[in-house]
Length: 124
Image 1 (cartoon, rainbow, N blue to C red):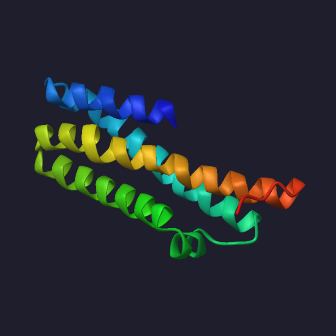
Image 2: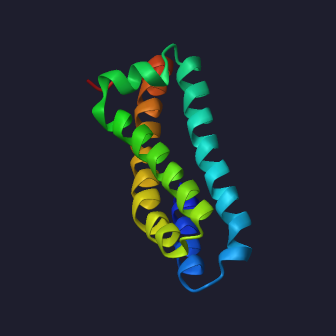
């Protein structure tokens, strides 16, 4: 997770300082990695006997993390298509970084469910 957050900040600087064309591939890699987070969390939750949607319905932080990441990726796509590199940089630096940071909580929740299921270390 830390690597994605660092990558987001590095890409923001690249877009801000005029390296938009070479950074486009890295931006796609970052958005693909964000998609992988969602796929991984979805599969993991299924393995744990629940769904990511059910967890989001009962946990506002998870719901917010999912929504914020989707919104940030949509904004990136829109700004990239418009060629608004300053907005791409700002979105990477602010929204994407915050959304990725929030995903730590999603995986912490899934880890707690897994610990409860495997060794009874349940936290109320």
